[in-house]
Length: 163
Length: 163
DNA sequence: GTTGAAAGGCCCTCTGC
DNA sequence: GCAGAGGGCCTTTCAAC
Figure (cartoon, rainbow over the protein chains, first blue to last red):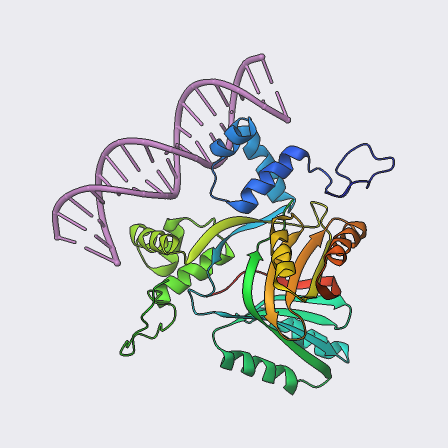
């Protein structure tokens, strides 16, 4: 891992304030499988179930644990076409309309970035035709400069943040 | 997965075989919040808890529901620098070594793609220095042609597949 | 698929250390 | 902040319709 973050701070967690090593271990276990019981977590960490519960409750309250979700197999439900779409817009109004696409079922991620493009979208489609239609909507928007699409051929890792 | 897609299948679920509209509704609810009880799901769907349980168990067994995980706030645990890295490799051996990076804590996604690059990585770092170090490792590898990095400025949507 | 019931396990709180 | 015990809810499975 990286080192040298701290100069004068004696606590190892400078940015993750209030997240100690035990918390991180809990987060790691829950990020991998949220079905674990407090009893199981406790035995893995040599802690009592109430102690684990206290920590998890605190981390849920302060937003460190955002939520727990079921991971769906996109291919098994027909969404077998994953793509990254880069797009540049020439004005803010157009960008706002793109951000509104977050409500579309196909749109999984929207980021603004620094680099050769302005925005990156991750979309999971049910068919090439659906992707074509989506790209068509983007082209219809005024004030966009360029769209570049990367169709995913294979996925070799896909998970959430790890503490 | 199964093979044999039927031609004369009258059911609307062509690709998501065995996933009917009720299943999709369950998946949608659990993809948003996996903490819901079977009783709650049942009342939302006008089904009995055992019926819901049966469906969920089946979908977990056949992999439609891959797993349930806790979503961690990357910024709260110190990983506040998200980036997409595009890289082109000139041989397969190098690509294999990149795929091995899936075990790194910072690497969240690895995809091979069609388009102006060969692979896309999503990485979440604890600091700019950590990103620099990671990019340095890529450059040290023989057989890579080009690396392009997009640092994320803002995230406006980030979730998993939706049925 | 639904109802009803029954057993088991876990959550959650409280109390004491 | 952590360990131990009890009430209560939910899960899970079994019947029968």
